[in-house]
Image 1 (cartoon, rainbow, N blue to C red):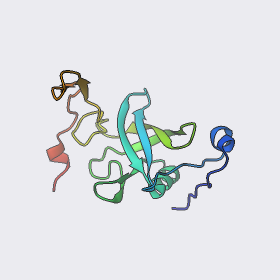
Image 2: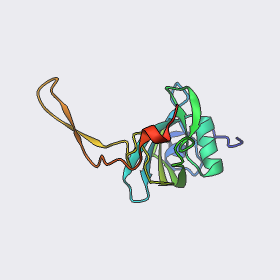
Image 3: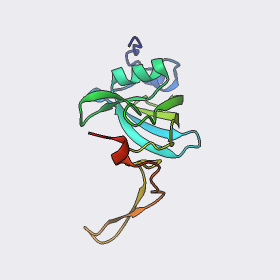
Length: 148
């Protein structure tokens, strides 16, 4: 990958300038919110510099898997590749927003659902908080897609 990122500049350059100066955390990661074109939140993931560069250069979403400690192209196993329609950065350039088109069934979650956010948190007494399914229909069977 050849994309290089500018070093962090002044407060004004970061917030008002035209130069992309992403702020990676101490682990070398930046958070990425992923939505479809309609703005439905599909997932949240992390990117390192390599994943961000690959995403910019290819137009396909790449992320960094903290659990596997490696770069991964979204959809490489499932076929539900994400084509990036627009990539935005927040005001202080420490969070990203990817607007994507999802190939195949349109499911972004490895559980087979459209979104990774398929449960709502419902309050209760301490220790009694519950999760309520919301838009939790499966669009594919993960056991059939992720073999091994």
